[in-house]
Image (cartoon, rainbow, N blue to C red; front, side, top):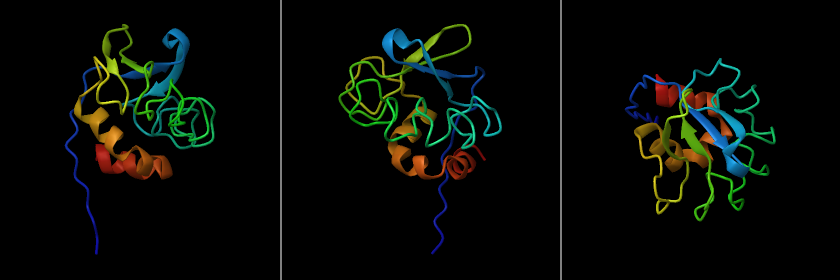
Length: 133
């Protein structure tokens, strides 16, 4: 049986970026850049899309990918998860699976990533195609 996932994702006028860590100074990659962009969280061979890079949200053992770290978007109780901003610093919300976090990013792309983050981690390139194509 073939399962086809169709997720309507809005095209964003702005390129959205993730920042995390202390005072959200650590760049964590581009949220809606294409999978060939070196800063994209969807580039499995880039810094921010790699499951092995310490600053990748996809590294289950790194600061930003570990579900128990307070800086991780995957921590359901995170008090200081990454933020989503555009190049001008406009705030689009906190990037977190914590549904109770005030000002949580709740646009369609973020909600899709929250829901499927464990599966996405296994193959970001495949999921990029599922989400954006």
